[in-house]
Length: 585
Image (cartoon, rainbow, N blue to C red; front, side, top):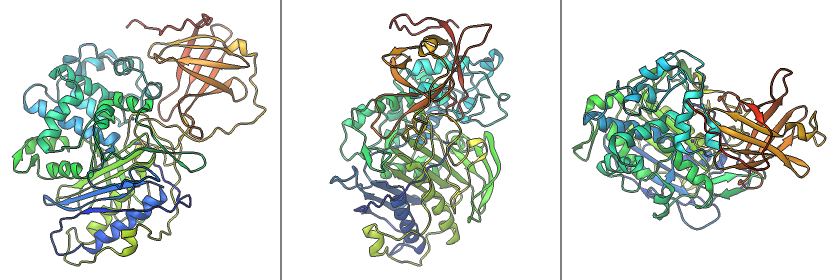
């Protein structure tokens, strides 16, 4: 909706009933010690993050070592998670789009070095020369030169997909083209549109035909409408200011917002289906004896395209090395084995997927709570450490899980991580916890970045958050009427500020979001968006300036790494006549 910040959770004194439905196929007569230890750790982290449910799948050498669900699909209600429970992925969706494009490349319908404009003639970037050179490979590898998480506010305000893709032409670059990693969601949304332009099919339909069906991923979908037709679905949860959980209703507007992220964050799937996804990559493009992609294509997808960080490691972990972004995957060149990884957070859920091709082993973890990507990431990197500490094989030393593990009540002495903020359509993240690589390079701090939409979140779609803390006496410098008017931006169109009784209200975007402007002192305000549960506020910082030689200027953000947007005043508010400003190119 990444890589981005990392979230943790608090146990909050809640006693979780962790019911497990197990489907295990082991190469030996019982589980290895490392697998039992990993499960104990995962259950402890699940409790730390207050995740109602979780699912894990581990595969090695085309066999399933573990496929298991824990906890509840909806907090406090019957319905146990199992390996066929459907979860929202977030940014681990991106690898599916890269695989889609690989199918088209092998069919000769696209080339990795085709220009994007060759398939989407209306696509443009800020720099005309870069627009003409910008290739399909560039779109997938986060080396565009744009600021990280460009146009995040478009996701928060639920702009149509076409407006988001069109908006990139107005975003000035902050680095040279192809030199620097800067994670994006909007360019993967652009990739979805390219798939549609080439195939004539809706993105999600082509994904089902080209990837889900050939891989036998029978419970994988990419829209809320498709989810509504399924049973055994994990409900996403938001954690409110009082640490209670709010189950996300199926008809909440954000589910459609998630759909509009498309390839950036919209895939929903299960542990069992992700087991097939991992087996497909580990077998270099084959599944059940059938070839879907060639080994050369798989190697291309997993080859580094841009450096993320020259050296990363985690406190307490012996493994360290450089990090690169590939095509929908991050590559950690660690010893003893390189590891391909991606995390994904979304509104109310989180996931992480990783595999070591050289060892033929992989893992996927799913969670149904906001910030669950932190939980999933913790477990994936603990898996890496434990597996290779055990010699890199599913050894013969066996120990069945203890009753405490099966019951889901393990003791855990580590401090719970603190939730931080996330992003709109989705992004990878790292915890920096023991056994996990620290936050990679430009991905951002582990805590909340300065400014932006406040919130507890995973990385997926957007990031509402904590109740606002402000001085009760905060008052603006000027009479409220001085702030009223219309403000325009070439990407976002028209915003209008007007008086609504004793306070200011701003109307934004094509959905005409009406948000109260809370004074923060001086000419600063906070826009509080409607539609979120009490105790989970989505906010956008806003500041007005009044230069002596021109119109008033509204500045929004910054939101995460997305820089501030400026909206010069273009005239008075027209008594509620709010037309979206459609700028020429």
